[in-house]
Amino acid sequence: QYTFHFEANEMDEHGWVVGFGDLKKLEKYLLEMYDHTMIIAEDDPELDKFKELHAKDLCDLRIVPAVGCEKFAELIYNHVSKIVNNDRIWLESVEVKEHSGNGAVFKRQN
Image 1 (spheres, rainbow, N blue to C red):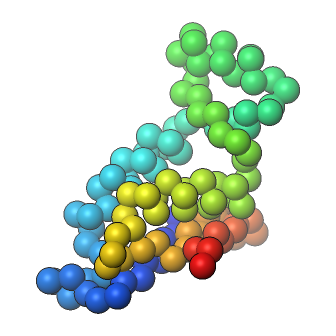
Image 2 (image 1 turned 45 degrees about the vertical axis):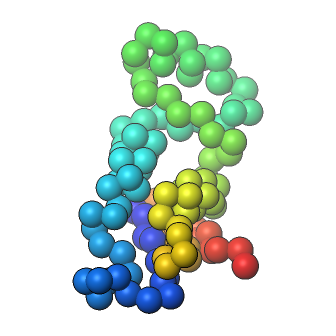
């Protein structure tokens, strides 16, 4: 589960901080990166085996610097802030929850 907190200097012409139409690139990124994929850290000792599985179309592999809710929150924040941040709006934080007992929040660094 992903929760995004956006902030803005002012509302848009519709009175919103961000509209759903503005989040299409965010949705595309989340689906491509995390939906039915295998995410492996770049330093995983079995990385070559996962690459072989990917080459045989047995998994849809994503290689990231590190894994875990904390790192996913940071990775998502860094990617999504590049998509949505502008002079009016910015991504304040991202919360990632695996389940009720495991989650993390990455907040904007001022």
